[in-house]
Image (cartoon, rainbow, N blue to C red; front, side, top):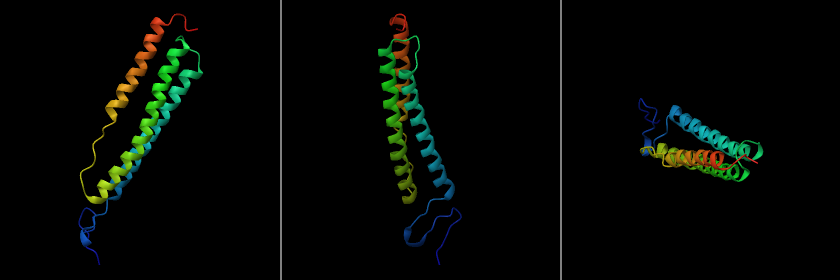
Length: 125
């Protein structure tokens, strides 16, 4: 028979099981990153597909930045989920988010590219 403490972690042979609520929260975080990745990729594709008052070159550059950020977000979803899952199983501290600042900065860069294109690009061709 196994000893189980109040937190639901098994104490037999030093093995610790993650609480279901924490494991499910990790899954929800993974799905949030996947949604973010899809939104960034679709936004990048929409910039190149739809006509707007920004020249095509500027729209393509901003779209490429957003699509690239979407790929980074998809990788973060997988890597973050695995790292958190391993930390939970080992009873270690959860890993810190490292890519969030870069994604935010990348979105700002894409918006600046569009703004510069709108201001300097002329009639939008």
